[in-house]
Length: 284
Ligand SMILES: [Mn+2]
Image (tube, rainbow, N blue to C red; front, top):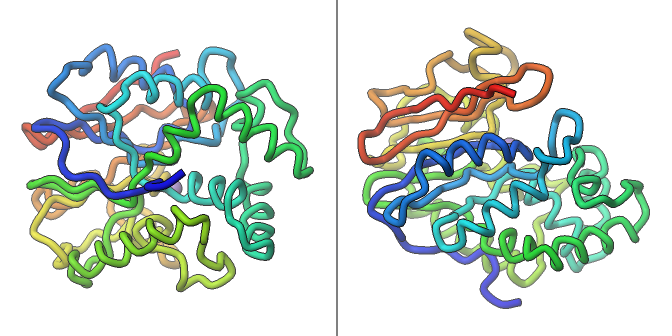
């Protein structure tokens, strides 16, 4: 398929931005009930696959991708580390690179395969079976429509934020080159930390609290699951952060929470029309 992962221009006047759902389709149903409207685009910050809690027949990755498919043109998704690793495992054409992604996928996969009624093991047939199930469900098209970032006149959305001090124009060019590589099934060498895009993988970017000088636009990210309410302030290694989701006068917005069965955390979304963060309660 050509034109996988290509950048799309601003598509709507109004948007809501939705962070890492990790299979929590029930929460997306609530968002759709509240905001489904022809003039509003749904910007997903990725990490929709891999469910941290236990599998539920009505709340899972397959159901979530179905809802995104039904949103059609209104759903926009940016690339995140969980999708990147899954796609590398399914598509990287270099055998050595494919093996690296596959090994890593085996470590982070969580109830994505089982959401399609398939057993999970480390055989090659698991990947082939999953690919077939995704294709038949129309979910591969959703995954191939993933973009490296989404930008409007007002905001930039990526999974793990932008590099704070590198001009956004330069970062964009690199991300577009990456999209071109991925669309030809050439994935970067996972063992080379520097080869992996920071806008998709970096916890440092996703947790940083200082002002972003790379752009004047509002920067939105997910990825950092240890933001409140699970931690008031976290400081350790590269993860130095503050508890607020909105920083620098609303110029840096961090939305990820812990959506799993153990913590039952709420979902936090953001709208661009009033630049507000809204809580979607996680009531089961
Ligand atoms: Mn992530």
